[in-house]
Length: 264
Image 1 (cartoon, rainbow, N blue to C red):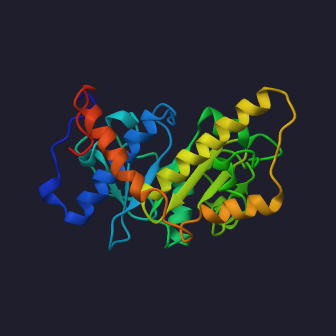
Image 2 (cartoon, rainbow, N blue to C red):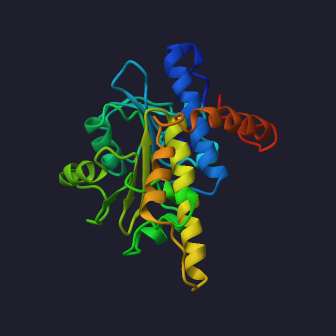
């Protein structure tokens, strides 16, 4: 019998709670935005989001492009990565790649959304001994607010979970050495905003260092002040206001891209 790898699924809007449906729409939008801004790696990586009021998470089917993902194509799993519900398809989930997400979701109840990427710039900075340099306003928001985790091989070993959580600490961003980057937050909007800015910071660093000229960095007191100004409790939780604009951007593009709309 041939395998079913269809990416067309019936809507689950009327089969889930209003809270779960909203979470599905927001997570699908985040996948589409990661694609739009060039932060994908074929079918790999994950974005996970906790369904409000539950310990269940939503994750992508392993095999779909980020630009194909819709609210109804997302899989419901428990915190250990066991499938509770998925659409009728032979696609499953990449459970081995879920190790990173599962560790953080279990250890950080304040974290509802987690994004992991293998972007060209993120990987480039992850191999730099200096790490992320505070050379731009975008990168300064991470001064004192980013963790580093040394590479131990593909993240499939459950024993690595403890060290991942330790190295992330209370931060909402982490560089996985020789691997990529990760962001998290209380909402998918905040996690995406952090990832977008971390990616911009990495791209800026790669470009500046490629110019092979002396770099100018502000004094430490300016770096500390700037980092504090961009923390969620200082002025506003960055990402929430921006999220409405991001959704409008997707709504306009979904009418012309040939794929099912993300909110299906």
